[in-house]
Amino acid sequence: MKTNFKKTLLGLAALAAGAGVMSACSTIESKLPSELYDQKLVSFEDGKNDIYNNKLGNIYDAIVNSGDTNSARVLNNILYMYAEATYAPFFGEGGLHEAIDAHIDGDDTKLNAILAEYPIYEGKAYKAETIHLGFINKIHEAFHGYVNNSSYQVREHFKEELFYDAQLKNYYDLETEESYGKVPYNQDAEIRDGAFRLSEDYPEVESAGMYLDGQGTTRNAYFLDIFGVYEDYINRALLPDIYRSELVSNYLQLENTSQLMMTPARHIDYISLSDNAAYPNAVQDLMKAYCDKVINAAGVDAEKFGFTFLADLYKGTTARYYDGGEMEAMMNSIYDAAGWTIGGTIDIVGYGTVAFTKQSTLGTYAENYSKLTDNRITDDSSIRSDFTSNGTYTVETGLAIKYGTLLADSSKTNTGWYTSSSNLSGLSSKLSTRLFQVQVANEVGVPDANLLYGKYINGLYYMMPTSYETGAENPFLVYDGGSWYICRVDAASKYAKLASEGEGSYTDEEAEHIINIIGHSLASNETFKTSANKYYVDAMAAVYHDSYVYDYFKNTFPDLFK
Image 1 (cartoon, rainbow, N blue to C red):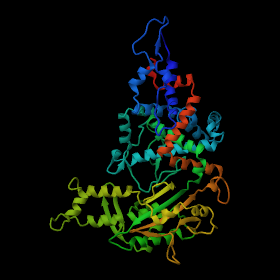
Image 2: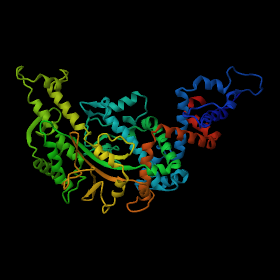
Image 3: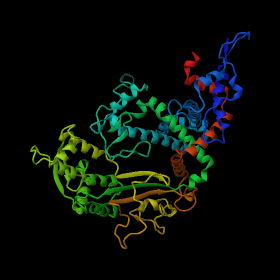
Image 4: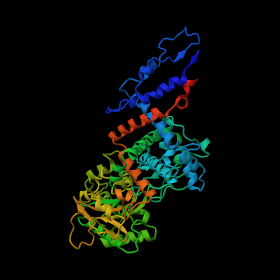
């Protein structure tokens, strides 16, 4: 007896090719070509014996029903295989991650091998670096999401051990203390800090005194070693979707280049602070003081004293700035100019003694906390209920929870790349409706342009609303619906800039990075995903051959070959 493994597996690969026939359909799913339906799985040398249900079609019907999730799963697996064959596997010997790390350390041997083997990179290192950075950022976004997942928190603190244990229970193969040489996760719970921002660079840049990935060192980080400990998790839980998304982005670059280049993209940083009803002018005064002391002040690093710094002043989460240095000096200068006054200190379990200003959010908490007494007559029952969650825990614990939540609040500021299809509901429409106008792209990067949409101050570009008070000292400071806004635009793309035409144009490396970002912003669109899937299954039908598919299934489903 002999088994036709290679023919059978080639038939499974043809499921993807069968999908290509449906090019006029709105959906795409795997189908078994009719000529393979009656193919025998097992044949005998004498040709006389046979086995019941000895057909590929019988197996197909048993595990893949038209319209169910199995057919989509087959397609997704093959698309992932194709994507890895296009961009190189992420991990392992000869993988993209290892090659880029070696490149950063000055050894280009592995990267050169990838450039020679994978035509997608056209032999250019920056193209591989762009793809790698996109993968890294998506992995980091996922892990940062776990930091903010209450399942892995203790009293508003992130505890990596909880995440680690959860993935072990989900049967992921993680590093152990024996294999890693030490406990493979941070044992201490880390304060979740709303001022922490994900780095857009690789290697990662520190933010708010923290890193997302400790890379196995002793530096302050939420995770001890993301890529060293969680390789199997990343491989199975994250990379398949990341690779398939990259295929969609690449499809758009191949088939819709002009649309990508004409899609306006902006890298912005903005802040939104709501009025404090108890102190009606306090937030306006704080914003104006910040403009005076930071944005308009010559020689002051407006990025060092950025919007997360201002948000901390507003929230009252300023303990980190009492360092006797320039951060404390700037904090005091802004508070003094705004007329914000120190209200005293408050003891918070787990955080120690914390100073606060009356006008800050923490000041409101402190004022309410002071109304809680042991006297039933003078005690404020509604405030007590708020601090104890209706008697679930003590008021001291409630204060600590409120403070931890306040520390972790990152909703006051936002930064990153956005396109015209992005959700910018947190930004005033007085700015968002102007942000993606071509005039903004004409002005950003060209300080001597005829400025109509923004204003350059100390080398940085700030958006302005359509109308503002004549002679206004801070025309970029916008009030709308009870909140105050400032929006800085650090980069703004348009077709000419991406095509390296005219003033303010991007280098090839910069353009590649921005086009890739725009592609990813559109890759979740179902219409584009469907079109991309059809495009790639056609490509796979022409490229995949017998032994390649055989090796793939043998490695992916080893039990079939025992």
